[in-house]
Length: 75
Image (spheres, rainbow, N blue to C red):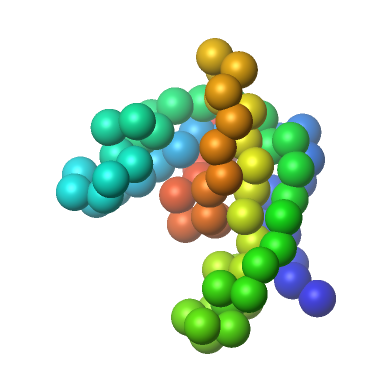
């Protein structure tokens, strides 16, 4: 079983430190709320179970995006 760093209802800030990341301009510094926790098999590929978790975030403007743990921080 995967441990979740965040829970549904948690407020978060997206923090993408790599300015060359394609999502940097669109998401870096935005705030929202975790609305769902999804799992996939990426953790088996990377060897890090935390990578198997996708957090669905509803941003303050109402748009939704899926983000991995490494790009989320408390607000």
